[in-house]
Image (cartoon, rainbow, N blue to C red; front, side, top):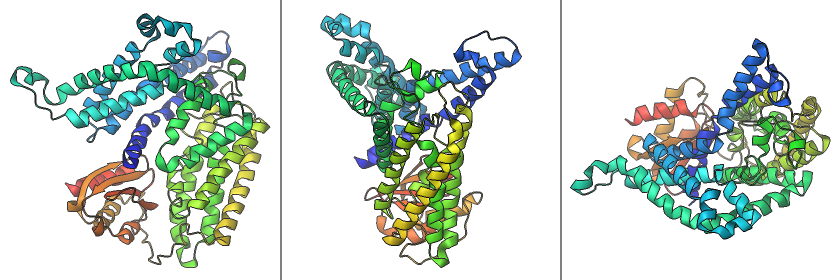
Length: 488
């Protein structure tokens, strides 16, 4: 089950990776043409270009659910075949049409008498259903792509039957959702309203849980409640739609803003603590592992290379790390700093979101950032030294990591990793997410973790008996490509 959830988490990163271009386009567009959302005449070439860019970015943010449909469908397919994306889209069309308000109120008129039920089906075309359709499409592809039908139906054999099967399954799923979805929706409303009703404290609890669930990939489910318009919150969606707090029932941006000081400054502070507390002979190792990860976090808000570098070495420290996020979110919410992101809370998204109408007091990132840097540094340094935590550079294993750099020497990195995995004959399957290699191996006894670490990777995980994940960083695709070449 955990393996399946991790695969789903990786698949969700495919559509999420599309969002940065949305943020860039809309950020530049708003800066050039404030009238796009604030009202007024749109005249002149500069305003025209801005309007054009906002609409281009809006094409993505307004169709977020469809990105999840296709991205998850292709991502869940064992060989990432586009047929799975087509099957997922067929599933989406089936479910959203069968469960549209006009359809369900015709089938069951009593539904129209309950406002909450009406709202549930009004919101059926949401990212949650998009993810569900992607799962249906991907799994139907994996199960039926090689199906053989009788001669008189042979035209529909193999991949041609995948979308058909996905459609049939979606009919059955729709029947179940007809009764289950209103209950699920009410539960999501209760969760969201419960936390939203707690104001700044609620925002802090959400962000704490968001970080705590990173290792399992389940943070995506939580994000759909608060970032996207699944239950009527949609902090991210409304923020990038050019709205303000006057247009919604909460302080717009409060479920995103707290990430900025933590990711841009807190992570570098924690990284510095790790470097300074590393063993004398391993400081270079610690620098190689966490310094680049901290820079990545500051610039674009990608924190996985940093987090996976220590979460399994020192899980208690990771809980503290998540707690610090929650605390700073409460502080950020109370002092009125508001910024939004389309991808993650790095300097890039801060720059482009600053021109949106909901952005407030963005200059406060400096004092908040300094405070986050100091607090993360002090807390991490104290905890590491006091409890002798095994962060990067402090492991019991004294084997030195070689100076191989993954930033350009991808073939050598891949060769070392492959050797540590027991050679190509020990590889059953190879995949990757945004920062990690994900592999299935035949014989776990053949794995040499020391050899894999000698490639300069951030960490190694074994979520299952034959499952191995190697945390490489944001250049993982290049390493995966080289590994695929070597395995062939």
